[in-house]
Image 1 (cartoon, each protein chain N blue to C red):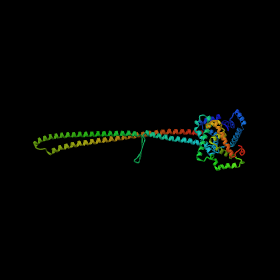
Image 2 (tube, rainbow over the protein chains, first blue to last red):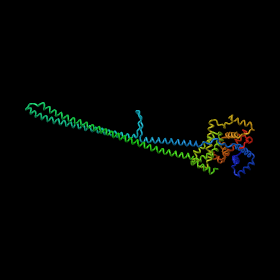
Image 3 (cartoon, rainbow over the protein chains, first blue to last red):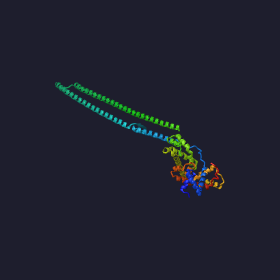
Image 4 (cartoon, chains in turn cyan, blue):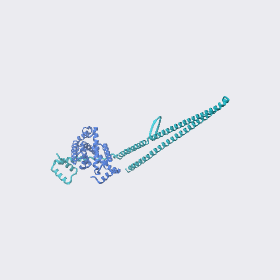
Length: 271
Length: 198
């Protein structure tokens, strides 16, 4: 039975890993121990048999570069998809920043930027409408006052005419006392005079009302057109800015991609 | 002992030099292939293990702190893949050599040889039988026998690769050789019928 030390020495001796002095001591030990010598001989014969196995030369070359390139390609693949993901993220962020809104309804697709801007415009629109309503109310009030004033004026004129008529009547009564009656012609002249004045006043009132209505409508149309133009300009500016921004980012991305490709090509050529 | 050139080469690979890596592969791939072939006993799987080993080298060489330790690190990777392959084969229940004695067709070849002890073995036959004999060794012993006998590693290096003591490496070598001796005797393989000189 060999000890661990014997085994270690046998292996060192068999494979030439002993220095000169160790070798001399072990050879002396072998000479004194036939069983150890027999053991060594058996190990040597086995070693010799093992040594008859020739080293195999691979019949096919090691396909390592294409595989590594596949790994590289995977890396590139990953990078490409990371680029796409980054671009998508950028677009989403831009959309979120500009409040891009896409809605489908009534058989049409609506794409709009900047909802907050829209809500601001909406508020402005409401304010303009409120302002217009206020102006309309003011105009109505003005017209009402004007009509009331005209009515007062008519009432006053009527009272004045009535007084004049009374006076005329009194004088005519006095005359009548002399003549005892008012002629039909005289009465007709008075009534015609009253009717004519009333007609003129009504015509003035209608003309004034129509003129005011026309002015109000014109100002309403002008303000609406101004508002629509301002809104269109604002929308165009927003779209233009967003497009310019996206174009700049795309150009930067393309430049980066070209640089990465150039580096990869350079690396590939070096290989 | 690592040469200065081989250390410089490993250092260049660590720095990402592709040409140096190709050079490194050329230096080592036949050795690793032979190691895997003797460990696994199958050409295709040995090529696969060799390929996996060098892919792992390419991917992880940055983690190798000392270029002087490249050789033992490389064998560690190869051995791990060989063991993994061995486990896969055991799971598949088709590991051809472990159940060698029960495999009628393969065993019949050896039986025939035993019956005709005068027959001389041709080199190819001898290679095949040696591979089969190696496959019958326990994995720990097989790893040491191949590294020592065919790859020429020192016991110190083998101990480093397997992370065991030198005495353990020597002990595994010793029992591996005894095991092989027994197998060769059973198969009637000896110096007399292996006249072919390599």
